[in-house]
Image (cartoon, rainbow, N blue to C red; front, side, top):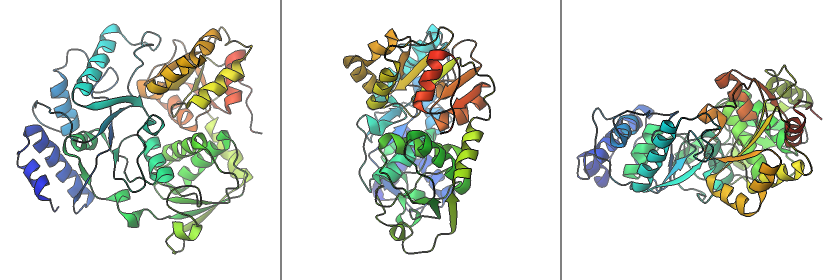
Length: 425
């Protein structure tokens, strides 16, 4: 790998041991990937440094040691300096306001609070969300980033035209300290053209249908770059958020194109750079039905213990929609309704009265985490329902529960009645 003079100086230790370890990690990482060089980045989104469900538990050696071991692959503790790049903490293991409900011990809560203080002291912005683009981190077209979180990566690559691969704890930790990331994958213009042309033969209008389409496409293309043809209605942020999250869950999609809507392709021809698609796929009513049945395949019992909304984290509009669907109604005594949102949007929702309205109806507004990341559920939960293809893909496998998938209306109805009655319409 060719290093620029400033990069070689970092590797040689001019900026301290931790930065040298970070640069060493990036060089080793880049060489394995086949990258010829590094690229500057000033937009890094990484994991909570440590916490009850992550890399540090009570009694372990301390934050510098945890960061050195888990984020820099260093064999010994190192003093960690302030970050060089603009750096952001993504979704974490718990909600510090609702830790008891989430089954977190006081000691574990204190460890997470301490980790956030450590991150803030080192210049990391505490966004505490899987959707940083909803709360102020909105990279521009062509901007080189280093982001974790598959649903966020596919959104900023596709909708915004930023450039990042799905990174990990180690590479983002090293990028925070150096402002560098290997120049490979979706940083390269030639890798951003389409691979599969998807003929969409079904009207895709609501959020459920965008989730179904995304999940089916992910199954078909794996890590390819799908190009959608036949979309007749312009989707909003929520629909594209659910589409990308689903495609990244069932497959490994990090970039897609909807010509005329997403950032980098005005036409199908432009999406493929004038080349022929490697493969052509057709999404039909039969594929839609099959995908819906698959996403509901773990659901057997009609009684619903938990309804989870907010994967990826909910917008203010989604929170408002839940409030409106609950108007004059109340969550069933034997069920729970949890709505997850970024910490910053929770504060706005509180100012708007949405949080109070949810609580009055027996629901809870939570932030910072989700059941799949934090690995928590209400005690005794056997059956969950959600409007998220991503969450119903992961949660039954992670937490050994049954899962139902449907519209937001289906989910709120289930929370109110305690019974699943959703169906594909």
